[in-house]
Length: 94
Image (cartoon, rainbow, N blue to C red; front, side):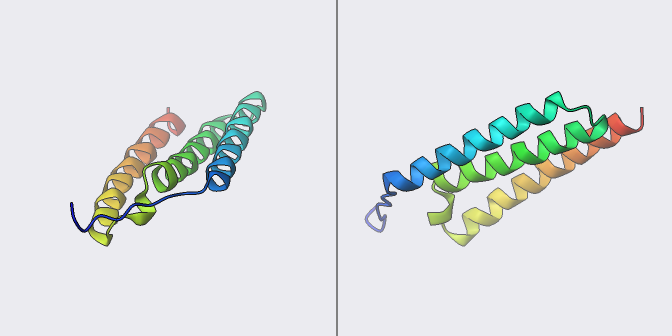
């Protein structure tokens, strides 16, 4: 606990993250209105993954953590990508 440092993020950064997340949410809603068949699900999942990355990086302070912790998070995200790929393959080949 003595070696911990406090990471103070300015309000401007939080405002930009909020605007970015709201923009991606608006894009996701817009994509669902357009009929792109199976591509709609793929685009929505990609946007959701980008939003999750932004939340992990800024709100969960992942960019301030050690390399080992980042490797663990990357491994979890790799499993997430595999699950999404299996889901999309099932959806596409029905």
